[in-house]
Each structure stands twice: as C-alpha cells, then as structure tokens.
Length: 263
Image 1 (tube, rainbow, N blue to C red):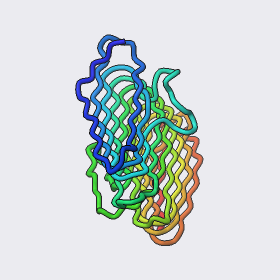
Image 2 (image 1 turned 60 degrees about the vertical axis):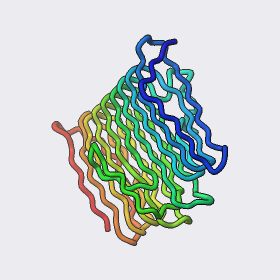
Image 3 (image 1 turned 135 degrees about the vertical axis):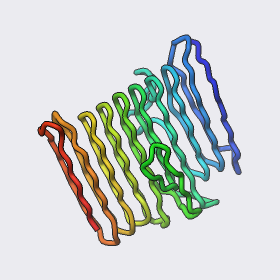
Image 4 (image 1 turned 45 degrees about the vertical axis):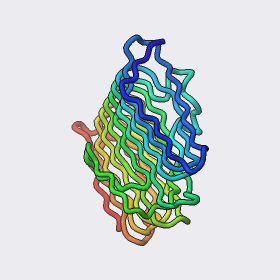
C-alpha cells in the first residue's frame, strides 16, 4: 500500500487525555493523495472512519466535549467494503463547536459516503448559509445536542447544512439519504424546539432548500423519487409547531417544482 498525505494536521488541545482519532487507510493505489486536517480542542471527543481512493480533502474540527464524527451506528465501519469515504475528489468539511466548558450535550455527525466528487459541509453549533462557500456563523451560545445520520451514494452531490440551538434541554435530529447524482441539498435547523427532518432522494438533478428555525418543534419527512427531478423549497418558522410530509414521484417531463412556507 502506498499513500501520499499532502497535508496532515492532527492537533489535540485538551483538558483531559480522552480525545481519540482512529483512521484506517484502505486504498492500494500508488498515488493516493489525501488532504487531511483534524483539530480537537477539549476532551471526550472521538473521530473514527476509513477512507479510500485519490484526492480526497477532509477537514474536521471538534471544539468542546462529547463530540463524534465517523461511521454510522446503522452501517458500522465501511472498511471491509472499501472505506466509509470511497471515491475521487470528495470534499468533506465538518465542524462541531460547543460553548459549555464542563459538559456539552453530545454532537454526533455520522456519514456513509461512496462515489466521486461529493461535497459535504456541515456545522453543529454553527449557522451556515446555502453558499458553496458558506459562512460559519457562531454566537458563543451553544450547549450541543445535535445529531445527523448521512448516507450519500453517487457522483457530484452537494450537501450543506447546520444545526444551532440555545437550550440544553432541546435535541435536533436529521437523517439524510441521497442515492443519485447531481443533487444539491441545503438543510438548516436553528434555535430551540425539537426538530426532526428525514429526507430521502433517489433520482437525479434535484435542488432542495430546507430551513427549520425558531422555537416551534417542527418536523418534516420528505421522499423524492420518479423519472424526473423535483426542485423543493421548504421553510418552517415561528413558535408554533409545523409538520410537513411529502412523498413525491415526479413523472413530468422537465421536472416538478414545490414551494412550501409554514409559519
């Protein structure tokens, strides 16, 4: 096995010794280039996953405590089938940050990514906009308690999202499955009130924008299938709980468009 690591920054600035990083390199290629940057600031933080193939860029930040980034509970390690991060030119940027100095609620970002040229940018404790180069806004008031389980298979997908809360009694949850090419998805959960989002996309060329915010305990469950893509915009806001469920099977030539605003 030959692997070329062109940038490796593993920094651990801890109040305790219980930060852990477990990485497994799977590839047998002769020219695997990996740009890898990991910063752990705090304690009881864990990163574990395996990777494969050429030209991946991975940037991970954990600032606080009780944080996890790595393979999913649902799938377990992907080492035996080629790596949790398997493909060419994947770009993964995940940042977790908590302002509580003693005991943050756990932030848990899980992924299972196959395919080429995927981009995943996600902030827990941050509020991101939907730009391909998002701003990482942080207000120094974040107790943690965010959870995501992400599966992406296929080429050229882009997923940008964030979870931000102010109340330690609240938990955000997000499950995302994307099994096709050329999708762009933005999802944001902000402020207080339990918010649960489940999104499954199985066809190509969708453009999805979802924004759940304010104190309402909003929920959404969305499945997009069919022979043609669906462009979806969903906003759930306000202090009253909003619920939305969509199972879309688009057969219309040229695609379908749905826009929903609940407040």
